[in-house]
Image (cartoon, rainbow, N blue to C red):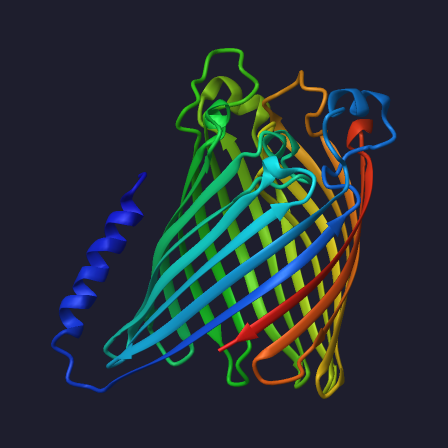
Length: 410
């Protein structure tokens, strides 16, 4: 199924261009842009146990703390043609490390999306996103130490049918690709094609209830499977979801999902022994405590493909708490805490001293303050404390990160 979504995207966008060239209705659009700079200091850049003698030997030539200077530019537009809407954005960030110049990199992101309508009953979207970034030290240390870039692409479309004023049906298909820039990591390149169908019911007060079924085909295209392997080159993740968006009051909203998941390797020799199936959930609660204060809470148990090159999947159980407070007319304060337990499945590297452990616990506390002296200028400062405890002692770490950002929007 690889490239199916890309072909559909190109074909559908061509149809839009052909149709819009004959549109009689008026056209309108908006354009926005911003530029900025950020300075970040991290006292444990590699997110690793600095007290370990083995770590000091393995990384003797590396500086653990560093200051990163980033400059960035963003641009976005939306364009209305008749009842159709096109949205596009692009972002470029240059990151320079003071002590670890080998990690200097340019991050890029761009996206395009078509929100389409056909008559009164059918509508949907068609999109394509791409981004390039440096591998993450917390989740993917081995790749980050090699200064590997990760190229990610996401293309997809959805079609909605308004069957009734309260009933809506949707089908969707998307394709996600992940590629590493370092050749030695090519075995971890993967392609995920997800298809889904959903039925939604909305009440008079705009609460909604839905049932959806999805199947994700995960393909490690450069990997081969041999009898006796503990990991596969193809997996199927099937999910059934009962969901609701429920307005508990005028100032609070609960978004909740109950999931049944089954993760199964494609090769029967490993399927019986290694298949995973269980329940999961995701509860998101948003409460407008006061006109200037908002509380957000997330409680979840999820299974997803892992970013780490040493393991294929991760199960995350997490609790996030966030508060946003507009303290003054031009000052916004944000507080965030996070607690997350991860269990990693289908480990692909059992020999590396720096490999990710089978279980990790993450804790995070953060504060950020934004000051908006004018309509186009924003100043931000922030602090983050990160803590990880692992069944692999080398990956136990604490880190403190501070940053300051200046943004000008036009």
